[in-house]
Image (cartoon, rainbow, N blue to C red; front, side, top):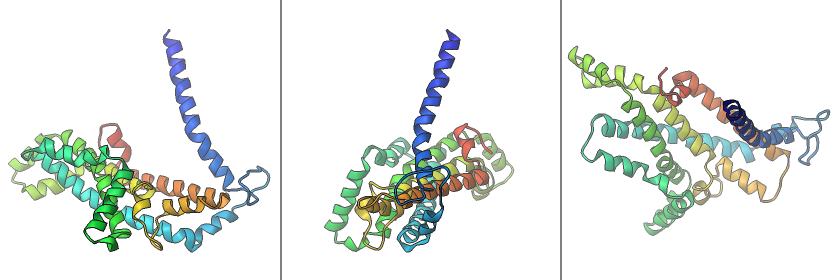
Length: 267
């Protein structure tokens, strides 16, 4: 009986991974198509479609997406750590209500948030705020709950005896934060920042309401392109985006131990 359950377990894992991986493989194969049709011939392939990625049509939206995602990661990282520290470590009055409030954006569909932001800016006469400023603010609201929750989890698992020992040795609160608390929760903070970057870089539901002509992010540029054409360039854009995100995850893992937070440890 145990062998049957084990077999079914691994079979389910293989099927799920196959279901996830096959579409990605199809996109990668299509990006090397020798013709303008989305096909793949193993003995005939080309990388010409990747050269088109350097055109302003794709390069400018990519750079804007990276700029916005970087700012969102930094802002949500700072705010998330401060909020988690106040709620979990300092136990400020009403900490449970504050945490619920910070996590509340997760319960609202992104499309609803996008419409609400546009209507709010229109009502108060700040239509000019649409574009990059509105995108950054909206993405911070979207990413902040994830950063706060991951930082709070790291702080909840932090051994307070280390902080108390440093305090007994004469360390100030600033020194304890800088040399003890922050290094110990670094995996959780960096994993939250990484997730914030990815969420912002790939976001469509919020961004579609907030972009403006000449100020378009890469996912929106992809959606606009798909309305009129489907060719290997589109596949190349998606493959390059996947490679970029994987590179970001790898770099954050090297810096702070992204996977350590997933396993409940530290690096």
